[in-house]
Image (cartoon, rainbow, N blue to C red; front, side):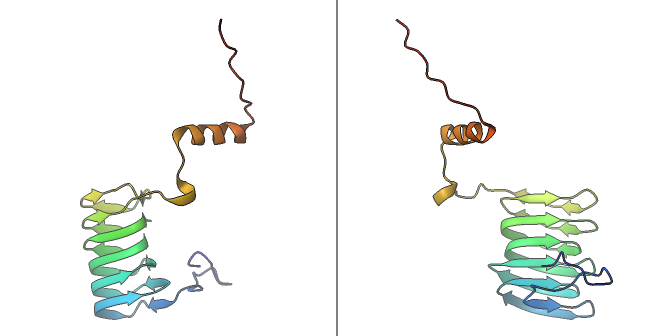
Length: 151
């Protein structure tokens, strides 16, 4: 994972399927599976159904469409993150964002418009408000009491 560090305390690229290093300058259209980390300069379009990490030294100019995006560097362009977008300092996004979950950490910058649509909940995630309340009460050890009929 990107959060792991080597013996010197530097981030590793373990778990990364594609990597564009700090001295990389590229343009065009990239698509990938799994996780990709970008630390260089890129102009163009990035497409994936998986995860993209924009490192601190990265500069991206173009359109990004991925499931999850983590930004530590600079992005100038429009972004669609289908599941989640997180911006960490010194990360900076200049452009429009479309994502259901947006996290902007203190010190990070976002300048643009954001559209957050509620994602459709399916399967095990579907609960009525009563089921959610009952589940919470059960977890807290609250016992249900029957109301006595009035009469």
